[in-house]
Amino acid sequence: MERQKQVIITMFLLVAVVFVLGVVLGNSWKSADSSEVGKILRSSELDAESFRVEQELFKSFESNCELAKTRLGALSEDLARLGKVLGAKDARVQLGDDYDFHKKKFHLMQIRTYVLEKKLTTDCADSGDVVLYYYRQGDPASEGQGRVLDELVPKHDLHVFAIEYNYSKELKFLEDYYQVNTTPTLVVNFKDVLSGSVSKEQLVPLLHG
Image (cartoon, rainbow, N blue to C red; front, side, top):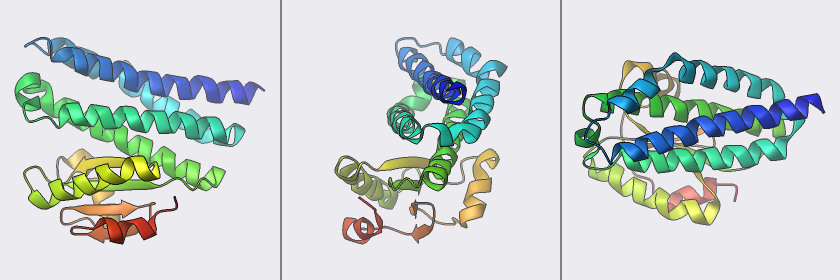
């Protein structure tokens, strides 16, 4: 019972962190000054709490797999919405000097969640579909791949983590792990690495749902 309570609390905290980040980023559009956003995101509390919650979740997944699946699904959706905000054409102008920091933090949160999805798959025998999507800004092929994924998300309950390729050294470790060297590149369900544009017809057979 105590372990189950720990799962509920830690999952709630992780979702809350992303929700707060979403509210802060959303409110930043209403002001030309994003210094408050930067102040909050730079606080050590956010980073420390995210890391602590991640570690606790790893220890607690076996206690309530269904809850973990539901919470991670909600977290993935929140991250997708934040990605739309940061991916807007005027995002760099709106967020100013803090843009790069926000984007690095966002990408790291996506990677953390991606790792948790892998943990869920391993420990809970979950068969949900997860795609890691590497893209490049201003690349027509990447934009086309994004449209294909957007079409598949509602039909297959697909969790997509979109990472800008070669964006920063802090994110390069995962690119090296999957040997990503071109865009677009998809990693489907943690194992199938597909370089170049992938059609809907090619992608669907690799999905579980």
